[in-house]
Image 1: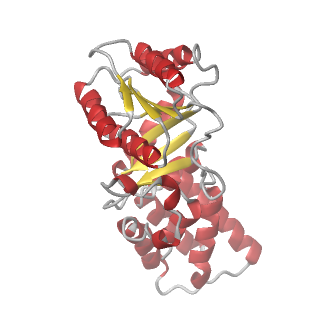
Image 2: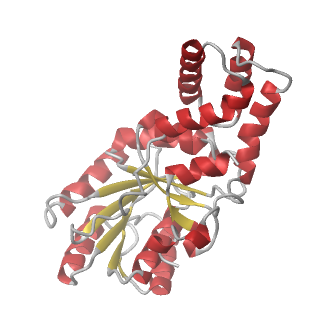
Length: 314
């Protein structure tokens, strides 16, 4: 199953099961907050605030949601709790930043090759995300080249090699400890020579020194532009959705270090902390482009805001 088939009718409702724990985490708490209440008053708003913060949506985003609800209450004068889900749904959907996947594909194939640089700390599923992206693109008939520029971890390179072989795509790598920018440069040169459609560059996920991280990512960007002047076309930050508030810290540090243009949130299946998708996207104003909801290749999905919200409000 490729990228562009997941929107077909046979996949409708496909987020219901993966998002079940998050749905219960958020809306069971809200249901308990309004039980026995008939009107959305200050007490109800306080209870909703507590429920949202406890669901890993984040303090800043929660306060924004509450402020929006307060404005609705003030404007409409009387809101009953039966309307609460509808109003919450409207307000969250409005503030959730997305890539409008309903209207556009995740890759701009008019740029050839389309260059994506992937960032994120170790252990968030970055390598797996790259492998799944490559496999799905290859299944759509696209020519893909992967660059193994995380030269500090042998496991990262080995995993990428396995994924590249599985997906039937080319990979460019060098010896351990090599200059990551050199790998990126060789990758884009190879991609141009092979008339590839997409380049995906893996990068090291070390946050212990933001200055080094920033310098490294800037160097990678600069050397790629010697071959492709407007590269990278996308900087994709991979966040582990099951880490909750730690995801906010990662997003903050990486957005300081480089110009993050999109998010991929992994491991949403089986976690009650999927509210982090709403919080990080809204707080940092970064569109969510992909979500991971399982181990299979097709379980890395193009993010669709309406479908995501629908899965939470079942």
